[in-house]
Every structure is written in structure tokens, then in C-alpha cells.
Figure 1: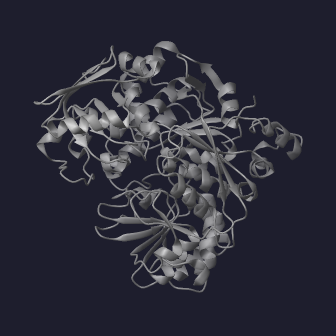
Figure 2: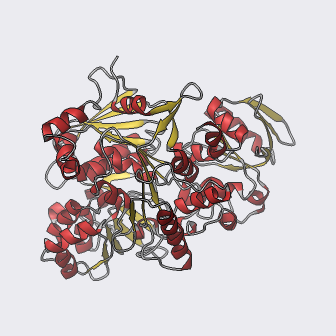
Figure 3: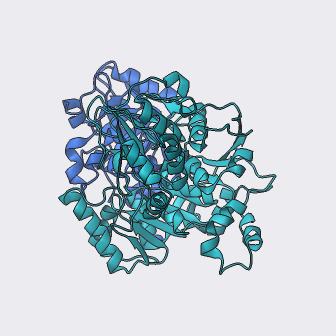
Length: 426
Length: 176
């Protein structure tokens, strides 16, 4: 019987099977940020094991609160910075060069098809867009990853999600994944791997695939994989052109990871998304999803465009197209955070930053910022934010605040209207 | 080092209790586990539940429903239980990362079928419940003043080995 992409990656990375059903995998990437790594560093020091398994495979960035907002976050950054320098990590990104981890690391070409990737961050599943097995882990898994270059997982069980049809104009990857999560629930893929397939995924850019894979965890998924294809090769080409004589040869190599036609799936889910409308969340769980028209007119106080879900250049282009020549409503605070310095530069060069500023948006540096209420853009009690982020838990963006998740187009339209609004009818 | 399991239980009657409710992100700027102690379940809104109440302070076991610990990967969630003396959680199911974080820290995330969880909740209606855990025999014994329930549980050999070793760092360091 054939294998899924996840099974192939597991087979190729298997270091040990200490018990039946437990797979200890060799890691290609251990990614670190300043919130979950310092405790691992402190524990390694305390154990007298302040070492790293490979300073070329471990990458680190300060992204959640940056520049530091107070003494505590300054210390977290310092612990990570000192550690990165002490072990001579080849790739460490500090203020000015830093960006949201799940946008920055792919942009640097660090993620390749067939890789195993962990990070102390639940949205690590984003990197599955490249055909990598990428999973969010806690600090202890991260600590062992740093020290030994391994991580343990249960047998991979895959749910194949076929996205069929074509997305209508004004409907995006964010709408597709919100719809899927709305259908399968926040517990629908727990302990499972999602494999995104079908013509809609094949037609998606890498940016759109990252949006899709990013939210696999919101259905409980361990990872959310897309199969590598020419779109993957084209995105990675600047980083791999010395490794392959041609793009076709790179594709041939990467295709070896693709799931076999006779692979076994625990479940196959088919979604015909041709008639899909833009989607918006209404409650405190990412599976509380409705078409935008049912939410239209609902008052908002803040709009947040950015994050590891939707802070990439394509997202900013879509939002700017809606905002061009328009002003945001008087009572709305608009915040846009390009996810990396490169994206910020591109947006500047394309005139997108000017569009945001003319509309009345505040443009922040690349950071996780408001998404988890840790730094700039926290809500006051009773306030409501239309957000392109991935999580709408109660209190997520500030105690007593409410978050509605949506696409950059819907968020931009809502900023203009001052209420949740459909960008197609603005 | 192996931890103590069992003691007075607190019952959280809701599914999908997430990591932001267990420990809000604003406290993730702490770099020691002990500093998290006052904030356990601070953002959990649940009828009859008071994060500053005595029943949480006395609890050594949490009994809850489905998909406990969903959301963030923050190990601060298990840690905030640990520093409050809660080393055992009994639920119908867990989010993967939270469950792994519990075992990685040498704590117990026991999974029971819905019918068994319902039995524990029913027991609680006749007064406070004291739970003891026999890891070797894989059995939970829950007692109220009126009666008791003895419930066997499944645990993977790997998770059991982590609890016995005291956590994943100890296990991995000895082996790899």
C-alpha cells in the first residue's frame, strides 16, 4: 500500500521507536522565539547542558513583543539573544531584521519539502504549506529539540481535505480554511494531520497555502500539509538554484515526497467551495463561522491586518485594493503590521503603505503584536476587533475584548464601513 | 523525579477550555514557573467557578470534558497547574500539544471515555470528590462521602515511561 506525505517524512526521519506507536524523529529545523525558548534555555543551563545539537539547523527570532515594551520582555529578548550569540547560531533575527516567525522563516528559504520542523509555537503548522511535517510543540519538546535534534510523535493519521471547485472573486484562502474549520470543528483534526488537496490548493500561491496550513491547529491538527509542486519550486528557487540543474529536476526530487495514489487516509473530506462566500467568525472559538452577510452591520472598534495568517504581501495588496481612495470610519482604529521587513519594503515600494496611511491606518513594525494581546493594539473591555489573525478566544486580544476572524479584504472593508462589511459590496 | 498524583478534585464542566483561559498570554513574559502561580484559569468564565476560590486552591486534580488545553503551544499551561500542586488532569480528550506538554513534564493527562467522565461528574453532585491514581495498575479511584467509583484507564507505554522518568528531558537525555 502507498504512503501519505506525512508517512514518507516519518519513515525518512525515524531515529527510534522506543515503544510501538511512538516515533522519535530527527529534526531538520528547530525554530525559536523569545516567548517559549528562554525557559528551555534556563533549564538547559540549570542541568549543565547548555548545548545545541546543530547551530545551522536551529533558527531564532524575536517577534512576539518587539521592540521590547518593558523590562520583562527586554529580558526575554536578551536571554534569547545572548544564547543565540553564545552558540553562534547562523540565523538569528533581532530588532530591525526580525519579523513574524511563520512569515520570516519561509521567506528566508529555510523550509523545504520533506523537512521535519518544530517550534515552540502552535502555528508552526504553517510550514506544512511547503510539504514539510511542521508541528507546534511545548517548551520541553523544544528543549530536547535544541539539545538532541529529535522529537517524539504518535503514528501519523491523516485526514485528506479536498478543496474542489474554484474560489469566486473576492473569496480567499482565509475564507476556505475558516469554512473547513467551521465544518469539522475545533476538535475535528485533533491528533490528526490535515493534507490539503484539490484544484483550489493547486491554484494557490505559497502565501495562500501558508494561510491555509496556518490554521490547521485551529481544528486541532498536528500539521497541515500541501503537496510540493512547481509553485513550491518557484518560491524556493532563489535558495535552491545551486542544488539543482533546473526547476524541473527540483520538482522531480520534491515530488518523491508526495502522497501515493493508493495511500491510506483515515478520512477523506470533500468540500466544493465554488459557491463559498467570505467567512467571518462570531464567537470565542475559531469554528464559530458564518458567511459575512450574516454578520454584516456588526459594530467594530478596531481593525487588525497582519500576523502569521495574513500579514504577507499578497494580503496587504488585497487590503490596499479595497482601501485605495477610501478613509476608514471615524470611530475605527486601523492597525496594519507587515509580517516581515521584506514585506514592509515591498509594500513601501508598491505604494501600499501610503494607501494604508491615507486611509487612516497606523502602520506598525513587523511583530505578533495585537494578535495575542501581548503588545501594541490590545483591546479595552467590551471592544471588538475585526482581525486577519487566527484565534478568537475570549480575552485573546485583551481581557473582555472580542475578535472576529476574517480575510484581509473583509477586514479592510469593515474598517471603511465601521461595521463588519463585505468587500464585494462596498 | 516522579510527582504525586491524586487529591481533591475540581470539576470544570465545559469542552474546549483553551490555553488562553488557563493562562492568558500577558503573563507569558514571566521566565520562571513559580511567577505564574496567581494566574491559574484567570480568564475562565464558567458558572460556579471562581479562579480565586477555595476549591481551586485545594484542588490537586482537574476533571473536565473534551479537547482540554486547545489553542496555544505554551507549556505555561501545564506549568501553572504544576506550581499550584495540580499534577493530574482527567478529561474526555486533550489538544495534542497540551497533552504532550503534561507528559513531557512528568504529569498525568488521563483520558477517559465520556461515560466514565459522566460518572465522575455524577459523583461530584453528592459532595466533594477525592481522587487517587494508581499509575501501575492504571486505575482511578474517586470517592465522595456517599460512594466511590473505580475506573481503569489506558495510557500509552511511552507516556507512562515519561511520567516514570520524570519527563521527556530525562528520558531523551538517557537515550539519545
